[in-house]
Image (cartoon, one colour):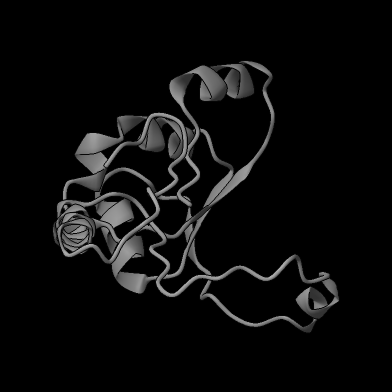
Length: 130
C-alpha cells in the first residue's frame, strides 16, 4: 500500500511546528514517471523536513539540484532490532505492488486485470488513484 499524506494532513503538521525527517523511497528524476508533478504536496512535506533521507545517490543529486540541500544518503538495510517485531497473520499474496501509481505500474495492473490475473483492487493512500 502506498501511504501518502494529503494536504489536509500536512497543513496541521506544519502549523504545529513539529520537527520531522522524511525517508524518501520513490524513484526521482527522469525515471520518476511524473511522480513529482502528480503529487506536489510531497515536495511541500519535504521542504519542511529537518532532513531528508534517501536510499539512492542519484535521487540525492536530483534533490540537491531541485532545491533540497538537506539530504543524506541512507541506504535501505537490515537491522537486527526489527527481528523483535511480531509477525502478523499470514497473507496469501502472490504478487505485491508497492509504490506510487506510475504510468508503467498502472499499465501493468490494467494488463493483469484484462487477463483475469488480478482479483484485488490495489489499496492506495488518500489522494492517490490508479
